[in-house]
Length: 91
Image 1 (cartoon, rainbow, N blue to C red):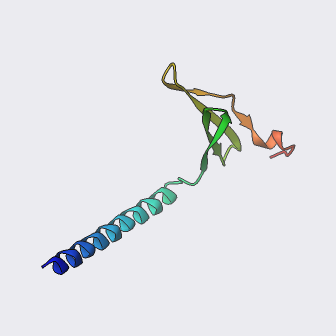
Image 2: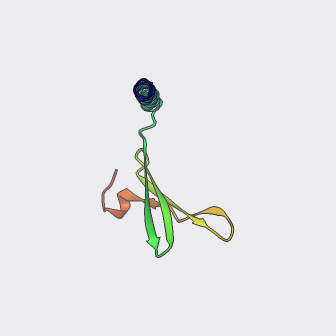
Image 3: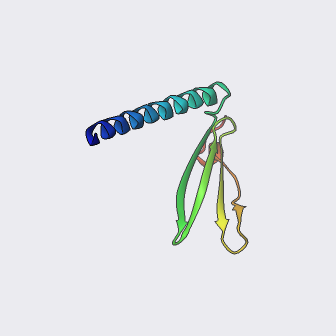
């Protein structure tokens, strides 16, 4: 009886993982079709105990960054940067 229960639980878990992977693959394809690949988002440390979210807009070649203000409990932006002028290239 225990063996049948364990085998059936393993089978259910395998089916759930397969369903999860299938749903995530369909979402990724939908994002690419809508132009969801125009941005790159990464996180990084700005200073000790402070992290930021960096977003690169691939169309306009700009870099935006936001950090979380714990006292005000909101995101605060840094000044956006034009990557083409920062790297000395013209469009």
